[in-house]
Amino acid sequence: MSRVPVLVVVGAGPRGTGLLERIAANAPELLAPETGLDIHLVDPHPPGGGRIWRHAQSPLLRMNSMAEDVTMFTDERSTLLGPVRPGPSLAEWAAEPAAHRPYRPVEDPDVADELRTLAPTDFPTRRAQSAYLDWVLRRSAAELPQNVRLFLHRDTAWRLTGDPAGPQHVHLGGAVLRADRVVLALGHLDSAPGPETAAARAFAARHGRTYVPPAFTADADLDGLAPGEQVVVRGLGLAFVDLVALLTEGRGGRFVAHPCGGLRYLPSGREPVLHVGSRRGVPYHAKTDYRLRGPLPPLPRYFGPDTELPDGPLEFRRDLWPAMAKEIGFGYYHELFHGHPGRTAVPWDAFLAAYHPLDWYSPQREALVAAAVPDPDDRLDLERLDRPLAGLRVADPAELQRHLRRYLRADLDRRSDPRHSADLGAFHALLSLYGQLVRLLPRHPLTARSTANELDGWWNGFFSFYASGPPGFRLDQLLALADAGLLHFLGPDVRVDLDERHGAFRASSPALPGHHVHGTALVDAFLPPPSLDRTADPLLHRLLDEGRIDEEHLTDPDGHTYRSGLIRTDPDARLLDPALGGRPHPRRTALGAPTTTRAPAAFARPRTDAPAFRQNDAVARRLLAELQKEA
Image 1 (cartoon, rainbow, N blue to C red):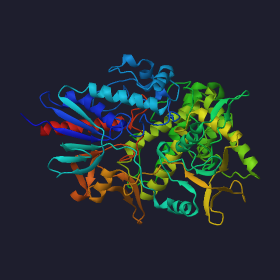
Image 2: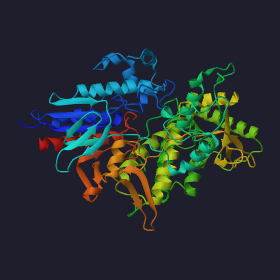
Image 3: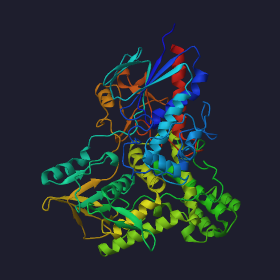
């Protein structure tokens, strides 16, 4: 009798779960009935949700996606070799969990109550998503064929050993697993504070102050932020939104409806006072709470698999961005012309015929839009969207607060008014761009400078700012906190100096010349960038020390080098092993954002042909074919 091959997957969060779902879908085709397979999922956190989506976190923390926009399953628009296995979105599962096997009641009564009343357009708690991911894992396990067995290990992988030509050994806290193939699906990892935080850490220690470095907010130590303390906060993205929730409602405060509309905050007295700023100086745009009025824009149109690109390393702004901007414009105007034809001056077909040959930044394109879209407020201005406070100068702090409150109120009104559904058309185009970049960049790499400053820098920031913001009620809460005197905006291009004389963090912005704010605590409210040499994961740390993995890096002809923090893999997701001369390790695979790829999260909006699903399918099929061959 032949030996049963073994696959070990380190990481049982959404990416490991998604890989298991694809193995279950492909195994009947690629694994002979007489060939067995043992799969071991290893994670110290609960399988399904993993660390980020674990149940054990504050119920105040929510997703920034609507329930109907979250799925773990392939569908009719998925382009993959394996079979499509449709499944419910989070909203569909929550609406009738007993109809989706295997059914098991949700144990937490608060989460069960949330799921019973969850509307498709609600923004669920992360604990609700944890329950969904738990069910997805159990369904995937139930769909494995009889010749495949699954073993779950609530444990940490500490070491990986083994000759490339022989079995691999995954060393856990209490056991050693022998494997024919190993997959690292580690997802978002902590990193030790980088050198850019050294000065702030030393300053805080020297003066008895508090500094909170970049971290996942659910895991950050916020106990050092005292009631009433003046706290400077850098960053206005999703980590900031979570921070505010934990420091306000998380400390006993309450938001109540204001008689004149909006919200009013009732403090508990345990809140610190937050002075908040960032490069843009404004929070991420609120998510829309409406649907498209017209048909879905047919994407990709101007940036896709057939996009013609020059040979050699590319510059993002020069070679990619003009076509990407035109794609965003196409999504925006497609919805404006189809959903709101009364606000346009020409038929869509005529506009598109004229738009098609024009460069996005050409005067002719600007003239076309001006003639076809009479109201300037209906025209897409990407530069104004990117830097809404550019050039702002105000006379005093009160004027700055009034300006920012008007901005937030206008953003809330726009994102809740279906008259502006063209913004959602642009959002769909942005999602398409992200997926197309994943396909294009392996074949058309960027220069090191462009990758660092433009792709990983500006582009990721702009995408998150426009398309990955919080639900609208979060901006309502910020306004209520500002009214309560617990939140003050610093403005754009915020600068934080270490004031040795006063032993305080001094924050200022060019929007308010000559003015600064002193804080006795500083919070960097953003996620730590991926970093192999500072990773807190013991397995990756040891593999790096042993010279068995390497960090993705690029070097320009002029000597400019950029290290991305991502693990180097080949196009089939095999680890590139320095000990093998940089060749792919035949038995080790790694996948998942941001461990090895800049692709979006492991779950996706339905019918978007998610890059993560495509990669999961390709890796599952490769592993099954290899294991079958060796059985």
